[in-house]
Image 1 (cartoon, rainbow, N blue to C red):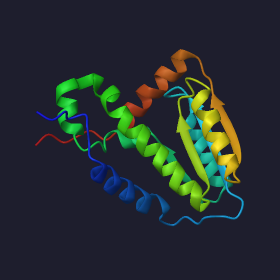
Image 2: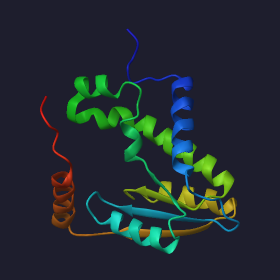
Image 3: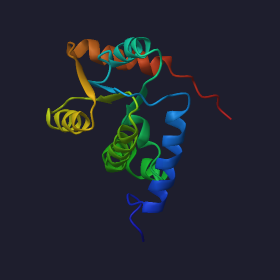
Amino acid sequence: MANIVNFTDKQFENRLNDNLEELVQGKKAVESPTAFLLGGQPGSGKTSLRSAILEETQGNVIVIDNDTFKQQHPNFDELAKLYEKDVVKHVTPYSNRMTEAIISRLSDQGYNLVIEGTGRTTDVPIQTATMLQAKGYETKMYVMAVPKIESYLGTIERYESLPTPIPT
């Protein structure tokens, strides 16, 4: 039996191209691009930062959030059934690869970028900033650090604001 965590290069490239097409709609590459790197635990308020950046750039910025790519894994539904709450660790290699590919392609073209992460370590943001600076980007890093309870409450508020599925 094939390992359902795996995916083909063709599956990945097809999804990557779909993501790129969707992300650039209504956006323009600029001569002097800026990358905003956001870090902070879930529920810390990164979305508020994102809103301020959207305003600052008059909406001409592409938001890249690794979490949005996790459910795009070609076998996500099967993996979710098999691993339940541990599914995230099995789809993270896919979402990491997708995030890196999107950053690489869009930065080659000079789009303003918002790149969200947890900032658990400094390695990834520093590597990303260095790579983008080498491509002529101005980089700005914003880190949200809030007490654990505020972060937890932020995740609860987000969960409660999700639409409730209608049973069929």
